[in-house]
Image 1 (cartoon, rainbow, N blue to C red):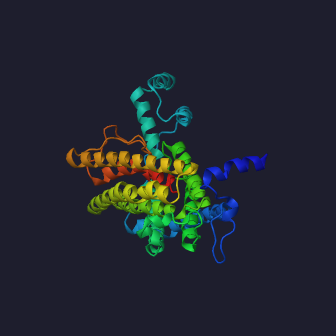
Image 2 (tube, rainbow, N blue to C red):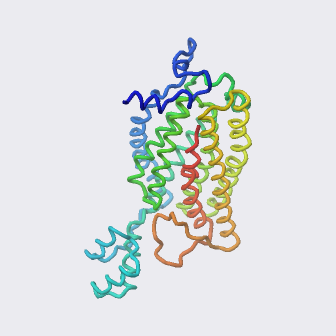
Image 3 (tube, rainbow, N blue to C red):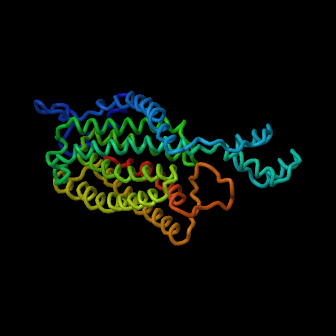
Length: 384
């Protein structure tokens, strides 16, 4: 039974070009090695190591930096203890009008007082600026480090300058240590995001991001297994670059450096546009779609992988439009519409942003849904 399922999942006619078998990839020439799916199983224990490294980094590096920048955890206003309201809060943080009316009669409180209690209680769960600063500093450090490593590897790789090299003699392309390290590092990082999602700042799209991380891990694994590493490294590198500036802008936002925040946000927008709307479609997707057709020819998984890359490009266009629209509103109207993904409720119903920091806080939430980190995260979904 297990053998049948394995044969169906790893069907050679689906994953590999015509006349190529998994056995062919297990017999590399002397001195060379081809990727095998089992090689990246080490990403799981490494993910635990990444989590430990993150905890040490936040405690020994990020928090001292936050203290230097005078970023404090802060103490939020505490809601008045009330067993009845706490019980309701566990099931719903925003009771509807019918529930409010029932609570009003039960407690002999007016509705506005109950609404105020729930607003204070929601803000009580609001993550501190210090916590958000530490999370962003960790992601900034990872993205910067992995991008530098990728560029050092790709700079001397012929397929960075001539993308047709991604497809010559495919899939019989030797695995280099740089490719292996890059893939394992990215995969371990996303496994660590999967685990830490249960302890990090909770957001309303928790389930969506959980599915996103699963899809990312699956696609990175499959692209490694069928040796699409050359194109995969290009895709990952292009998507990492704008995340660096997004996290840097968040750090400036939390440190209340408005002018630096302005500059970094502009750089983020430009890097996002160049990487996701220029380099990605006209350089990488063009190679995977047209050059691979000419050199290798289409096969079943080829259609799937190209379809996912094109869907990703559509997401890039949609999210860049939303980012640009928010930025324009911030510049010309002085306010930003509320993002449904907000991790907390504001203490005032009318509270809106009027500068880069407010605009950034909403923009980063929109981008996180599809990238990285989302887009951070939609972007990495298709690393194949």
